[in-house]
Length: 158
Image 1: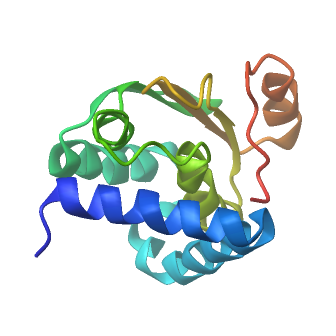
Image 2 (image 1 turned 180 degrees about the vertical axis):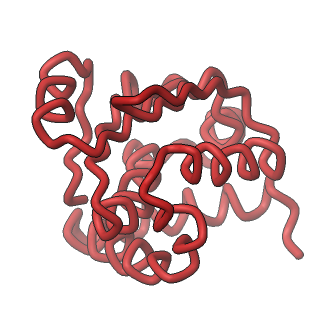
C-alpha cells in the first residue's frame, strides 16, 4: 500500500499531465472514476437520506485524517473541509501544485451523488487554500439557490 504522501503526489502529477494534454482529458478521467464509483458507493448513497452521506464521509474523515465538520439537516447535508490533508500535502512539496487538484473531489463524487438523486454543490473557495464546502440537496431549486452564493462554484459536470 502506498503512503498517503505518495499517492497524493502521484495524483497531483497525473492531474498535471492530463491537464497539459488538455483540460478535457482531465475531466474525462474524473468522470470515468466517478462513474466507476457509483456501485461502490451504493450502500451509502442509495439510502435516500443524508445520514448515508454523513456515514460515508465520516469514514473518509477517519481514514484520511481530515479536518472537517459535517451537518445533516432536513434540507441538505453539509461538509466543511477545514484543512484538506491532500491539498495541504501538495502545497508542501517541491513538485508544485496542479491548479486543478481540488476539482477531483466533485469530478469523482458528483456522478455518484447525481446517480442517486442528489444535487451537489461544491464551493471550492480557493484552488490554493485547503478549505472548501460541499452541500448536497435532494431539492434542485435549493441547490440552484445555493450555487448563487458559492464563492468559486465548481461545475457539477466536471
